[in-house]
Amino acid sequence: MTMTSSDVTAPAELAARLIPEEELRPRSADDVIRLPSFAEKLEECGRLTGTPYCESPLDLQNALVFRRLQQLVGVALLNPLWRERLHYFGIRSAPADMSEWERIPLSDKTVQRDMFMGARAGMVVPLDRGGFEVVASGGTGDGMPLEIVYSLRELRDTYRIAGAFMGAYQLGRYLRGPAPRWLFTTLADYQMWSSGTMVGGVLSHVPGVNYIGAGPVSAPVLEHMFSYPGHKALMGITAGIALLPELGAGLSPQARASFRVAMYGSGSLPQRKRDELQAFFPNVSILSYFAATQAECVGLQLDHTSPALSAVPGLHLVEIVDEHGRAVAEGEEGELVVTRLHADETPLLRLKLGDRMIRRPALNGPGLRTERFEFAGRTADVLHINDSQYSATLAYAALRGRLRSTTGVDLDLVAHEVQFHNHREDRTLTLLAAVDDAEGTAAVVEHALGPSGTRNLFIHALPSSLSLFNDREANAAAIEQTGYGFRLVFVPRSSPQIERTTVGKTPLVRDRG
Image 1 (cartoon, rainbow, N blue to C red):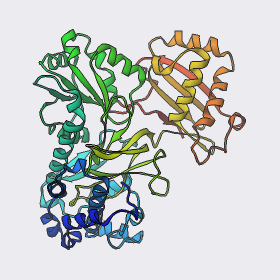
Image 2 (image 1 turned 180 degrees about the vertical axis):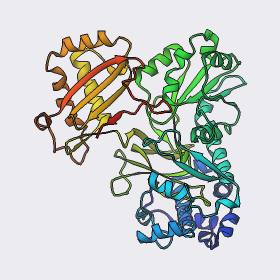
Image 3 (image 1 turned 45 degrees about the vertical axis):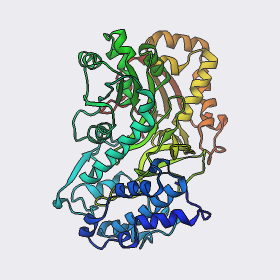
Image 4 (image 1 turned 120 degrees about the horizontal axis):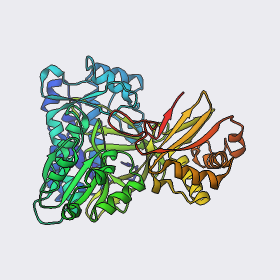
């Protein structure tokens, strides 16, 4: 969201009419419970302007969202823990502009735990009033429990808003066949996980489709589901989507042809897996559905030919910020920060989700108008080599390019998974690649590279993966002097040497400290 001093007054006046002064700073938890929902404000905005909120001019969307942010700060200040946190950073009233909003400190998983676990001291409306749902994270990187609390009424609003958006601007384009149309998800081993409740909640509210929350499926169950007549879309974690050709080996040609949309969870899907999916399912389009524990639908890929993710207007404030918490310019990379706009009873302001994004130009009609961004990797996807930090995503891209030009082996085409292991004590950086023929691929690469080829590969690839702010601090000669050893290791598919989380995700970097 971008607000400038040149914004016209009419949008701000309409926003003030929609959220009047008496609602801006409630005085008690009882007042908060009585507040009209933000979903009602979005609908009223559409009625007053004669245009669906998603298609409203961006300056109007920005004005209403900012008015909502002012209200959320007023709500949060009712809570003693939030009040102490905000006062510490000089925030004693609603921000006057986006520059003041950006003074609000970023929250992280520790803040989320302090606010919403144990005593759940960050709730504005106490838990004992009832009407809440507790949702757990299924894939936290640090292995510690992580929960968030939602008001059920606000959760239902977000499901309806996000589901309607998916139907109108994403799936409607791809599920054009005759009814019935199907939307499956294989997420969640148990329903307390955010993936089982929140994403399922959104998918179950997509109009015009039949929803099935399947959970993990076996080959016979997938075959049974795909025997239903009609076009199909399926949403799962990245690893689950990658396995569909193998899992669906027994599907009939007709069933394969009926699969129209494969949606994978947060992150990226290797090119090898995309090629396998499209070879096996001739009509499938592959789209990203980006979600997190605090945000059931952060961004959706609307067009399979473009990697850009679109925010659902009115659902969250999505910020891409620099190291000071300020918005980056279009085309620049920054930290993904989300504020849930439907959270009167359980506010969580400016939460870092642990992802890096590139800010892209907004979609500005005709039709849909919304902010866009592109996934650039996890915040933890950093290679620490002595005092320098290298982007693992960029390092992999550079290594892949040099390996392809030198040996003819393209990791995007041959590797099922890749993972860096950084052993800082031993000063060894290893890139593991899981391939079908580990020995054969290794022999081809070793023959082409020669005895010192792997080291040269890394030393010349790493400088191009330094950040914009420290790209002069290391070159090939400097990396040579770090004392690091470099290895490229090919392992069989599903090798235990590649470490996975308990939910089957494969982190790009494993750092050994």
